[in-house]
Image (cartoon, rainbow, N blue to C red):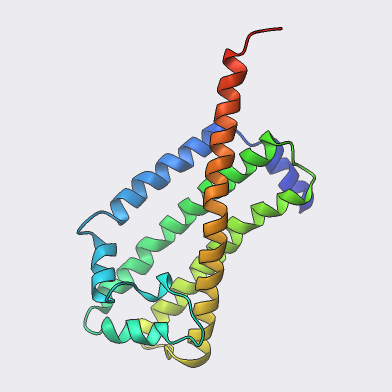
Length: 188
């Protein structure tokens, strides 16, 4: 597995970074547009659904689900819309992190562990969305153990995303700046 990560870093290129960035920006622009689905979910959940809030004891899913009573279909639709967003996020974070690690020549170092963060992010997102969907449809109780697992998934998702996203952006932009510098620097 470490060899696969090193290979991913060594083969990192600018085009996947740009492609994933623009795909994410376009999808996020649509998903989070004013008056769109996300805004409706936030309004119904009185300021934020459970995937935006962490806390223990895990009281958040039940609170939000009670607020969503009568509007479950909107929230379920958001869970579907959220999965491509999470995949695009993971793609962007992976491309930027790999590019940054390549630029800094950190293949084969402990720094490559950063490439696990986008995977953990995506797993957290999928688990979170699955549990919330089951809770909103009444298949799972939004209290107790299911709520605890949802809050753990949300915590992992948010923490890995908040670390990965800025590092990916820095890594990708750093690689872009170094590539531009290499093109314009005087030949010695």
